[in-house]
Each structure stands twice: as C-alpha cells, then as structure tokens.
Length: 415
Image 1 (tube, one colour):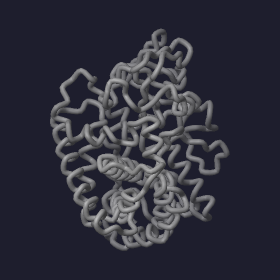
Image 2 (cartoon, helix red, strand yellow):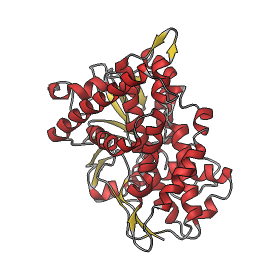
Image 3 (cartoon, helix red, strand yellow):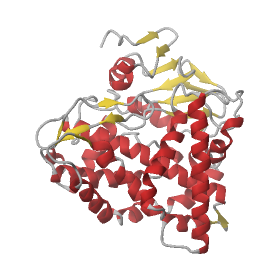
C-alpha cells in the first residue's frame, strides 16, 4: 500500500502520526492502517495519545517483557487525562485501581498474582470443561428459529459471565448487573472520555465494591468451595489478601476476563463465517480446535492497545528515547499482523507454523485468565458450529466505537 488511508496523516521525518481512533474508517477496520504503518517502520508518535507507539511484533514482545517498563505510574494512578487534573470525583474508581493486580509492580504484584493465580492454573480450569459445554448447548437450545438474531447477547456474553459468577459463588441472576458495572468501569479506558462517563464509572465502582464486600462477609462466616472463598483463605508467606485487594482482584477478573472473552468470541465467529464453507472443518480434532482459537486470537484480537510507563531513561529504538514517567503504547493487534513475523500476515490460517500472537500480553502481566478464556472459546465455538453448521451472517457486522477494546456492536446471524 503506497498511499495512506484517508483518515490518517503521517510525517515520515518526525514519525508523527495524526489519527483519530474514533474515525469510523479506522475502528471498523484498523488493519488497513496497520498494513500501511508497518510499511513506515511500525514505530511512531501518536499525536492524539501523546506518546510513542510500537506495532512491530518483535518490539511489542520485547517491551512487554522489559522490566524497565511497568504498569504502575510514577505519579499515581494511570490516567489518560494527566495527573494534574482534579480526581476527587473518582475516589471510588481510584480505590479499586489502587489495589488492582494489573496496575501494580513487584513486590506487591508478585504476592497478589501468586495468590490469585491458584484458581486459574490450567489443571483447575480444565475441570470447568463439562460445565462450559453444557452451558453452550443450553444457550444454543434457546436460539430463535427461522429469524435473524444477535449472537452477542444470545451466546457470546452470557457464557463467560455465567461461568465467572459460578466460579466466584455469586448469584448467576446478578449477571446483567455485573455486566452493567463492568461496562461502565471499562469505559474509563476509552479515548476521549467525558465527565459523564467518569461519574458513571465512579458510581459503578462504589456499587460493585459494596456488593462484593457484602459477599466477602458472607463467605468469611460460611466458606464454600468457590473462588471467593479460596481467595479469602489463600495465603503466601503468611500473608493474605486484604479486603481491598480482594475486591480489586475480583473486579479485575470480572471486567478484564468478561470484556475480552465476549469481544473475542464475536470476532472469532465473524472471522470463521467469513471464510465460507462448512465451519466444522476448523474443529475436527482437539488440536485443530486449539489451533483455530489461537489463529482467531491473532487475526482479530480483542485488545489493541496496552500501555506501560518507563522507569528510567531508555533508548527504546533508534531515535526514540523516553524518560522516567513517560508512557508508551504497545499495539497488540498491529503486532499480530506484522508481515516480518507472520507469513501472509493478513490471511486467516489456523495451520500456520509461526503462531506466536501477543493477544494475552507477555511477561509478568501476561493475562492471568488466559487458560480460562482459551477453554471457553475452544468449547463454545466447537459446540456452536457442531450444532449449527449452517449458521450464517445475516447483516454486515459492525465494530463498536471503542478501538482500544476491539469488539463487535452486533453480530446478527441466522440458521
């Protein structure tokens, strides 16, 4: 591609990019821009965000693992609007973020992750396979017949929220309320947020926290075999999670796990159906199921931007030096389509031998819920296409105006 897409401008000499992430042409298909930017070297200063971004696979993979960078801001809680703004109206949101595993670095991060990780190791997660399969079949049984319907609320959304609610031991009927709180909080991370979004997120944080604290109190007096009870009892070096840490960890597990899994499920179904033919060909064996899910994760990832802070002055790449406290952007979705790292990078090919996507991140902040997300996707997609091999897209899918969290607004299908 010799000419850039119409919605972006780029100064090759200074490597300055001007691109509104809310431009419809971009968030509907960011891969067009990625192809062109890979041709310009994959590293650029994104004016709208105000920091250097890296979209080459090798750079992203390296920087995710570089301990000279971290998630914890040197000036306080990360905020895209800058630390000098008044945050008094965000006290409840900030209270959760202050103890969030995702926003902390060692040694606190190490202790928290060790405690939380016990519930998400692969052997623990594998026990959920029969339940996930039964739930997927139950959801398919409830699909409307002979009429178009939106697969996201009918299948992609209820499955992961039901599983995590059952894991935690909270009422499954709370699912819609948990989703509302999650959506309202996650909106804080989108570009160009408003005061209304902030007020809503803070209110959701207060309500979510109060709900979880009431359940923690119940589980302390009457422990069960659920994740909440496990987290309450878990110790590392004689230390337990504080109640604040427990609440933040559960909110993170619900928000991060659910948002990403729903987006990836929708993106994966859209991708597979766009290949034409019988979708069951991608799910003929356990090995092909796993390979197909990994390629879906690479081909159309649910998270496209992950930010980190520099902890010292570093020449990140030739001509790009950052100072302590500077933020950088790692473009996961762009790295997954790097033509220098993937053969025929823009083709969907579950049989590829160069599979190494960074959709779950890398390093100490590698997604703690990755084993669960992979299992949910593998089981749910196989059930869906085995049960409904004639399912097809009924209207062109459209992505939401949230490039950062790359997912569909609707996925209307019929069978």
